[in-house]
Amino acid sequence: MKIITLPHRAEIKCQGYWDGYSSFVTNDKSVFTEDGIIVAAKKTTAADSQCFDYRNCFLLPALIDCHIHLRMPAGKTSPAERIKKYLASGIFAARDAGHRDGFLPVPYYPFRLLQPGYAIFKRGHYGAAIGIGAGSLKEALQAVDMLAEKGASHIKVVASGIFSFSRYGETGPASFSAFELKQIVRRAGFHNLPVMVHASGDEAVRRALQAGVATIEHGYFMSGETLSALADCGTYWVPTLIPAAVRLTDKKLRLEHTPEERSVISRTLAQHMELVAKGAALGARIACGTDAGAPGVEHGKSLYREIKLLQKAGLSPLQALRAATSTAAAACGLKNTGSIETGRKSCLLAVPGNPLENIDVLQKPTALFLPG
Ligand SMILES: [Zn+2]
Image 1: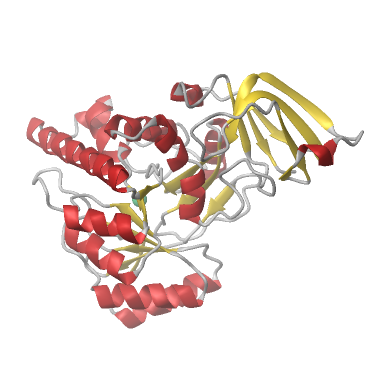
Image 2: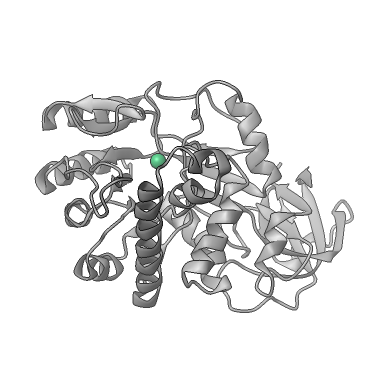
């Protein structure tokens, strides 16, 4: 896997490319770029244009992981080493979901790391590992201001617990009221920041939707009514299937659970995958995020596994690919990326086959092209 920084002008020859939206691969055999932007062919016939011969590959937009915890797990690997793993997996950008130690130094060029710094959770509720506790609405709003001032690219709010491994259907109570969430969204909007909300259980998701958040993370155990509301209002949903799946497949992690717990996790995952299928059928905007850094969820490689799980849940290869490219870019507010179109940034991935015919080509990408 090569990581190529594009020169001033370039032509990348390929077998064809998938633009990030369409149900087909184009017949075009070249993508042209100038100063890191995709341009129309006629613009780059200049003599100084450098040619990259990838005629044995297809191109698609470089991938995005919408939900990671770069600082987790603690120790072992540095954030910079983890970022190399993302790039090696064809991922050029990721949205972090918070850590109790806050912001990481940036930039990790050429990687695009979107950071909220700390997640905001309700004191006394779940969230201490990934953020700072707010004891009141006033404190939560002060936290929004502080994070905005420190350069957050979005605000992360923890609005519920996580799903129980021992009692099917339990997620802990919804921590913030709909009113509190609405005020947080409003304050974040004042700073032009979108709000990413960890919400599991029907009540927490319903409140987050009412508040007008940008993305729902996880969203376990939504009712049919709430799922319809999510699809109708166009809020992005990042279901994160892999954290539950690895608890059943990872040898070490499996042993941490009793057979009864494994059965609860298995049932929870099956129900969540069913929700994903129903959501897709309703037209919900599903974006791909892994929760990498959570137990057993590897940085970088997990995105391919999440895409496969979305497909297993019932998304078509096209829908699953969109979830990790064009829809992911929109969900994360990564403007001008996520598709191969004139005027978009030249973040491109070369893979050894047509991704719409065989999604497994994402497992071993050939080259990642990034703006210079
Ligand atoms: Zn998370």
